[in-house]
Image (cartoon, rainbow, N blue to C red; front, side, top):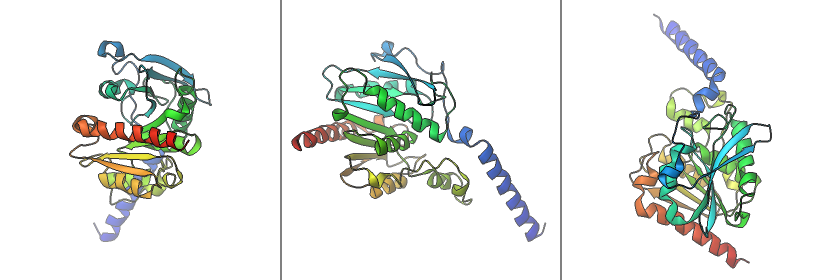
Length: 279
């Protein structure tokens, strides 16, 4: 085979791959687990989760859990990561109990008990609906509302913070955009231009004025630590960064240990205190 034939064959395979990517993009990007997969008896684990159903603006029915805390210091609106569904976060929810937070966690369309199929604009609509719903819950106030976005959920949290007020924003294991992530998967084939789902947090993060905490595992095997730092560096003040030493992508809340929870608690307490001091 000549060099020209080899080059032509390579171009052919790249074009086929791009076509496949465009045709099945949402299936490639999103990895939901639908009900009944998961752990759907939270009370058995000591988590007093209340089922909440609500609608996105385009009529898609969504599901979430509201976990109230007695005399909660704040409310955490949780935008979870790509794989699984909200029920796979039960262990993480349990470990957050000492922070005394109300937690509202929801599934994007196509995940868990939520209807529909996920795509970029759809999960933004779902995030908007979750924001409006959490503010309807008893004891929840925008003045003590924190967005928490992990991995893909960080994209949704940033998008929501661009459009709606909150007290603070916490981004864990978050990435910059889909183009940067595609380079991690196929570093020698530039496919960013072909991906319609831009998932572009890095263009939005400089415009957010609310306090921000970034956390990232130093051994993250899915979203490189460098991408988390890149996103942080583009953010405007006030901001802080907490490296989770030795943690990968899915074990941050386990390997982070006491220091991890102290960083979260300190950020929430200081943000609330500083906000109250301003008047």
